[in-house]
Picture 1 (cartoon, rainbow, N blue to C red):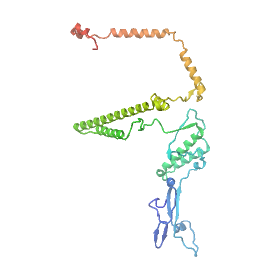
Picture 2 (cartoon, rainbow, N blue to C red):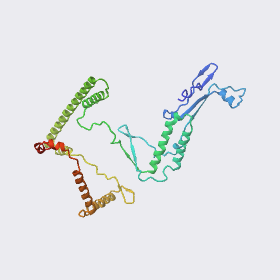
Picture 3 (cartoon, rainbow, N blue to C red):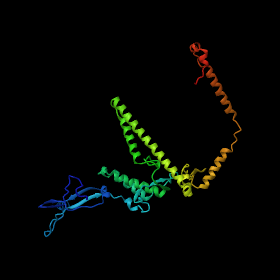
Length: 346
């Protein structure tokens, strides 16, 4: 409801009569679109009659309700956004799954961002930035419009593929099968004790005490972690022994899990001689064959004479530097023969 959210210096009462003032009229808009509305104002009908020089008929009566007026920012770009390009969330198991889009920027056309739809939207963004009226309240909306314009243009022009959640982002995940809530709580206690020890800037005795607390917490966590690992390993071995006779198929499935994990065999791309990038597996394999053939078929028996001469010069220079090193005669005179004969490393 926009009424009451405008400028405090303006009259926000929509019903004015000799009895008093009240708020009875509203403009209703979705909360997500609330940032697009600005400069809300309530104008009295009597003021409008005076401002516009309107004469009232003798048999008419000036209305008690006021006129609600507001300005809103509506991007023309939204009219040209097709539903196929619009981004929609992906639901999986009743949960919204975030999708990350990766664009192929190796081949960028020269006419990108020059389509009529994109130019119209960018002009709208520039006009919105030049309009200083309530720019602080609308900066988020302007920025979102700019991002949508760029992403939609890239969707139409560039090749892309949708990826799941990033595997490079550092997250706390239960990678160990024997991880449980007890280990998680112990790890949290270790983290808290470590921060208390590192951030303390007081006396030395208290800092030493906090360091000992941190060491105790860490030993407790490490000990419990090893116990859970041994317990899980023993249970897994017992399971393999129990299914050895009864279920051979399950037995070999468990055995296969003990080895190293499978590596991905997907071939991404390769650079061709003309500078283009090829994703065709046959071209990639042919390119690899040519490069490795050149590498292993080269004649390594021939030695460049210039390279050998350079090595000889470096060796001679190193020998001269060793000969010109200063000798500490006092150390030599005061050192017995038995000490010189002792091995350097015991």
